[in-house]
Image (cartoon, rainbow over all chains, first blue to last red; front, side, top):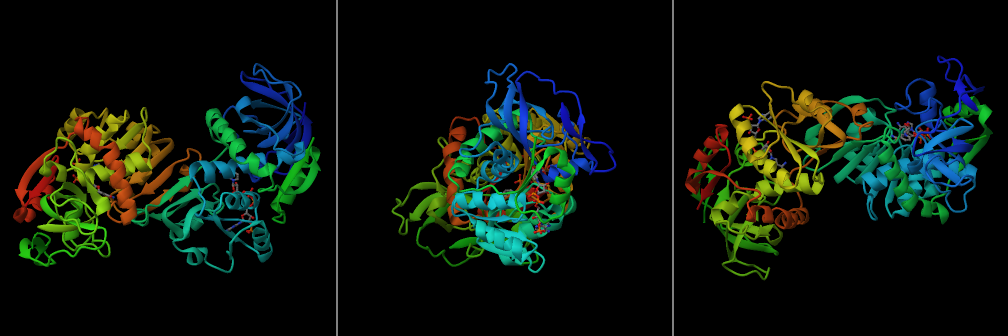
Length: 318
Length: 318
Ligand SMILES: NC(=O)c1ccc[n+]([C@@H]2O[C@H](COP(=O)([O-])OP(=O)(O)OC[C@H]3O[C@@H](n4cnc5c(N)ncnc54)[C@H](OP(=O)(O)O)[C@@H]3O)[C@@H](O)[C@H]2O)c1
Ligand SMILES: NC(=O)c1ccc[n+]([C@@H]2O[C@H](COP(=O)([O-])OP(=O)(O)OC[C@H]3O[C@@H](n4cnc5c(N)ncnc54)[C@H](OP(=O)(O)O)[C@@H]3O)[C@@H](O)[C@H]2O)c1
């Protein structure tokens, strides 16, 4: 089959469509003929050699896709069924092997291309804010990078849950986008100290910065508050004052979706379809596709995402 | 009334029975005539000036007691009812004002003196391992300081929940006590590195050390593991590698019982009576009183607890 591979391992943009071996099905997997693959920040990190696939996963880039079942293997699924897929890798190929637990129906009213744009972000946001932190109506949540792929989705999902939503972003344009999506409290992190603005008010924080924001995040948390770290764009190591956790009963938690076991991914997928797919179906949460490019243009897609000018998703079509 | 007060604020052992004002009842409080008061490490910290009572609480030392209701105030309770009480302070007095939500029945089969010895430790252990961490059958828990007041209670409670219990302690005598109480894995922290012994195996850790153990605790945690810090005997500030949290989905949480709001304390008390009192009634969890002294001997009680030779509780009787 054809797939995007990196022709020069020292050049993260050397992404070309080449001939590779077909995926081999293991028990419990189906073969999916890929229609479209979503582009994620993790894809760029992987091309830079900073986010290697977990052991046993495809070396091909791509954390989500949509398509049709070409070979149901031993799963009893139907050939030709349209599916959206959460992947440990392999989305940027003509075919991909997918554990049955990572198959999802298309959200009601969604095309295959649209479906490929929401899988990874929906599973990431729901597994952290819904399943782990248990965000509830009436609580206040802070979403860092509100204008990003994770951020724009999280704002809408949190509003659908009935939360008050605070966001940070680096420009007034991005903050205006956040406001249109429902954000209640807007903080330009280049001009304001979010910890000062939100001191003691946040029940949950979804953080993509890590070390650089730890101290401020703890200040911004309310009693029983939970800091959930899913990105480390601001570094990994820093000092922590554990004395700040005890009297206000704070929690610092970190997760990644990709490193989860098959069982744990299946749990996330099941819960996301149950709780988030209805929000997509009735429009409480809307996807936003910034651009659709042919799979062969993967390098251009990465360039575009890296430019920082993108609001919404880039999707590659086979 | 009479109560223990500190006659010299620079001498933590200047504890004498003196004449003080009677407590004034607020709405929702009852006046309890104290029969017995448990002695806790927090009492010693308070005498050293390191653990001030929360705003509005009694300045008198004492975090738990038992007694009879002398004045039900506006609560509709019965005068003469025997109760055990979780206190923000005031246990070392003849009378104490107690919010109704912090009253508990005596555990079945318990004397008033016995009841005074289990309130604080039961609420602390249950609120952290049961309510916060949700420890379940089949999980592995590590309890630091297994031979201490918290530790000896926690071992039994965790066994009653069906967990595998690992402990640390500083002597083989204390470890033998832990083994008799049901501990499955014994680590002498003066001779072994607990992180090495337990690497990746602990679903929950109940920690009383803080900074000094943070790195090792994170190494000892299993995927989805939770470190719950309730004491900072090993310091408050240290470096944290947030990169260690994400792939294994670890959580670092801290709590104190005393700083909780009235509402939150009432929740803890309710849940503790529901889940832990039956374990006391049928002997799955046993209390152990090391010594009973008259209230006037509070200084001697503190000396005894500070000696490190105590296994089990010291109780002061009015
Ligand atoms: N753990 C997981 O399972 C998981 C899954 C998916 C994604 N992620 C991580 O989540 C992060 C976001 O992913 P994404 O797809 O949303 O990327 P994205 O679209 O590039 O969004 C990142 C956003 O962060 C903003 N930002 C940068 N520095 C900031 C700062 N100091 N304070 C506040 N905001 C800042 C950026 O815009 P402005 O600076 O212009 O505002 C941008 O909007 C990435 O680090 C990704 O690796 C983790
Ligand atoms: N946050 C809360 O709500 C709350 C409530 C109650 C108590 N606490 C805290 O919990 C801690 C324990 O209370 P406690 O009443 O059980 O006190 P305790 O009876 O004095 O027990 C402390 C135990 O820790 C052991 N220990 C000391 N250093 C250690 C180390 N480096 N590693 C492992 N074990 C070590 C000690 O014995 P060996 O060294 O001889 O083994 C001792 O058995 C205290 O710090 C207290 O302030 C917190």
